[in-house]
Amino acid sequence: PARAIEVAATICERLRAPLMVRGTPFVLGASVGVAVFPDHGASADELLRNADIAMYESKRLRHGQRTPAPGRTVSQSALPARCGKASA
Image (cartoon, rainbow, N blue to C red):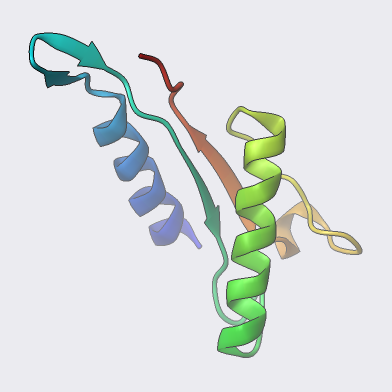
């Protein structure tokens, strides 16, 4: 999971850089859910489902945090991460 979290952090870092559109800066935001085989699922469907749950939990929390999926500990759970703040 460490490499997946590192990739998610890189995505977040790149999105925090302002994007200039016709002289107006925009800061993008994203929610990332990380699920890694076999810790967070044994099949592609289970991994996608757990990553999706982690992403929506990240959206709900609106900040980076490790949150366990129902019935799991943090170390067993998919990992949500909030990337930056959206603005116009």
